[in-house]
Length: 338
Image (tube, rainbow, N blue to C red):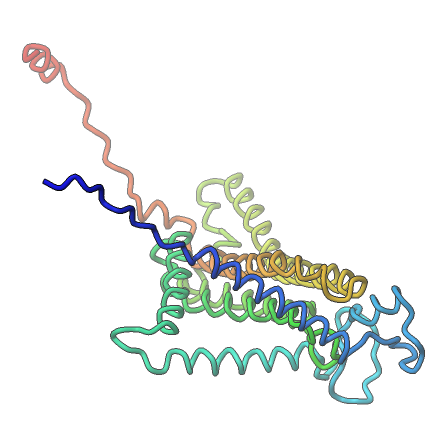
């Protein structure tokens, strides 16, 4: 039997930590170079007098931000009113950017899902993992009824997320033709009105026109007495008024968070040129993701609430029949058994 001790085998150095550090350094370097290139190629200028010298720091801040209405691309001779919400036929920078994002998202998703294979590659794995993750999250919130609306939930999340993240690109916002769509309240109101229409369309489809109206005007409750009917009508009217608050909260929450983040990032970018804003990109990426998720989740929950009737819980969970009272003979037999 040999007495030689086995030589120690050195474990290989883990490469995960080193590669992740390299990736982060690469991302930070790209953000730094992108911001610096945007500052050189599209420097801030005085929008009131483009030929004048841009004074630091006020002109740098005002030249980086677009307050409050977006730039009008078409018609070129459009007279800017400066109002936050406008009611005219024109194509703004946010609408143009929204169209570009729509085309890019549609073409990208079609190209990535066109050739599905039994043994998926990295791209197909990523798409399927994203969809399965969002589907599981939606079903965990809404139950089996949410399965019908998972494609809508995923579409809203991806589209709003890309729209939010577009504002973090170095040239978006500096060039007047491009601006993040969700930083314009007109766009967020449009998205909220689409969701608002879906609430009521799906509610009417699920419950019928009369059944859906009975959620807000429960006239049948008067059969249980005048007091019960009056209280039910009062509650129904409150619910009806709250329905018109939903698009306002959806649109203003999304607009306020995205636009506020862009203002904070733009001010720091104008004051520090490139270096410090790199540290804020991670926070903005996370916050923009959360806002896209909130809008999608609220849309899903509002739809599920619209298709649910008042007495649905009682129908799904019928009350168990009460046990018959125990008579004296049965009681005596039970005591004798013990």
